[in-house]
Structure formats: structure tokens, C-alpha cells
Length: 344
Image (cartoon, rainbow, N blue to C red; front, side, top):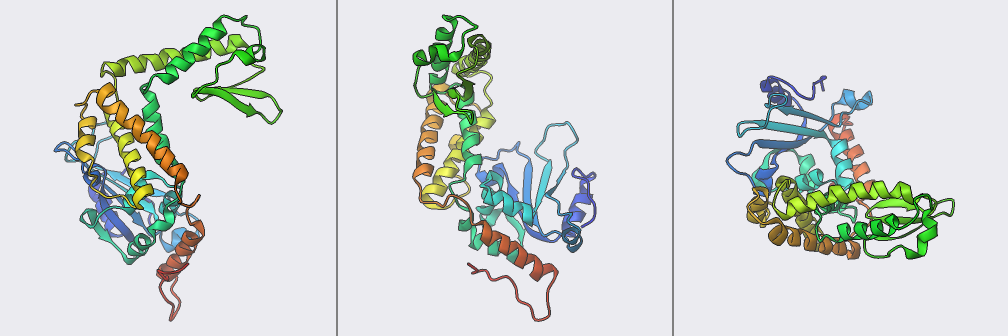
């Protein structure tokens, strides 16, 4: 495959390159896939390509190529087109890691597929081998958004309680002096010992050793409280909320739930109308969005922990699949055969 800039202009050069690339699959993606597209939505394409013989032999397999009609720095408009193609090797890696983009692509319906090869058909027939409890990227993204705007308010109350205690003590004192006074609840607790045997205390994701000076902790927690509180108060008034990010978080949680309970993801999502309302900021955050996201997150995390999915994807199978596919497609032997779609 020739050297190509990640952002190519004019776009026609990108189209020409795609036509001369060994495409495994190319599909419509983003809001068009999820069922949340509006008249103002641009058009996104994702795809997978088979690296060239030269790239493989020279060890220069690219992760991806991306092209866009958008002018640098400008906002996408409905006429813009974005294309991103992943090498087969990198796509398999993303899917084994449980990355959202790869799992979304694996479940794209036929109506979204623009072109595909028999390699993609073989991947889809064994996509269950990617499923595992390692759905971390889905869950982490959703949880970050859930915590960003102070859902429940319990985190804020926890920090306030710890701060009150710390401010009543002598700043030079070490945390160990008040160890037994420290509250133990959902978002603050003893977090075991470090490799040196020193006790640790965690507060809303922030870790402190028992040897830490109280005066050192106070400004750190105060900054967290002020910033977190500001976001929570704005959210209560439906201000300064990243509605698009929240809609993505809800979508991620919904998709994890379906993978765990039904072993698939169905696009377009039946929850698309609700997600569009969230994305457009048409719902009240505290009464209509926060409770749904918090409840869904708790349900999903519980489902994943109790699921019978394997701990990790079947990496051995997929490594073998890549080797046999590359050998059959790029280095065929006389009388050789194609990869066995039913290999174990």
C-alpha cells in the first residue's frame, strides 16, 4: 500500500485510494448506525483493510488510515464525509480488547454495509469469540460521564465529610493520627497496603497513604469538591452539560447490557428516540436523565460481574485467523486452501 497522509485533500484522492485498497469491509457508522442521525448529521464510514504484502514483510503494518472532506478546524456539516479504515491486524486487536468501535462494527446490519469480502463474513460468523467480561472501554466511558455531573451527590457529600474532619486537625499531622476517625462508606474506604506495607485510604478515586500530611490533602480534596460541586450545581439547572457525551454514555451502557444478556447488539437501537432527546438536551437532567444512567450503570456492572462470559477474548483463535488469512490471500501456495471458518 503506498504512503498516504492521514488527512488527504482533495477527498477524491481518498476515494481513489479506497478503490485500490484490499477492503475487508466498509460500512456506514456513527449516528446512521445507531439510529440517531438528524438532517444535520455528517456521514461517517468505518472499515477494515488487508495490509499489502510489502507492509507485512517490512513490518510496516499501519494501524489505520483516515480521510475527511472537512476543512481543518471547521465543524462538520451535513455534506461532510469522514472515513476511517483499520488494518485487519489492528481491528482484531481492538475487538479482542472489547473496544467500542470494533464491537459496534461487528454488529452493523446489512443495510449499513457498503462493501465486504469473504474475510468479513468469516469474522462475523465467529464474532462471539470476541465477547468477554473485558467490556472495560464501554463501562469506563459510561461511568466517567455518570460521575462527571455529580449523579446521586453521594460523592460530593463524602468529600465534604472528610474535609470537615481534616480541617479540624493540625495540618502537619499525618493521616495515621486520625486513621480510626476516617469515615468508611461507599466512596471512601481503606484500600489495603502498598508494597511497603503502608496503609492506604481512598476518597472518590484519590489514594492517600497513612504517612500523608493532613495539610497536603486538604487543598487536593477542596479543589475536587469545588470543581465537582460546580458541575453538579450546573447539572441541576440543566446548564453546561455535554448532552452529546451523555447520550454516548447511555448508548454504551445499553449496548453492554444487550451483549451480556442477549449475546448481540441490535442496530439501530430501539432506545434511539430517547437517546436523541438526550443528545438534543430536551430532557431534564436531574429527573429524566441522571436516574436512568445511574440505574443502568449499576445494572450493567452487576450483570458483567455475574455473567458467564469468559474473562478474555479468544486471542489464540484470532491470531491463528490472521496468520491463515494473510497466508491464503497474500502468499497463496499452489493447491493451498482458504482459512477454515470453523477452526477451533
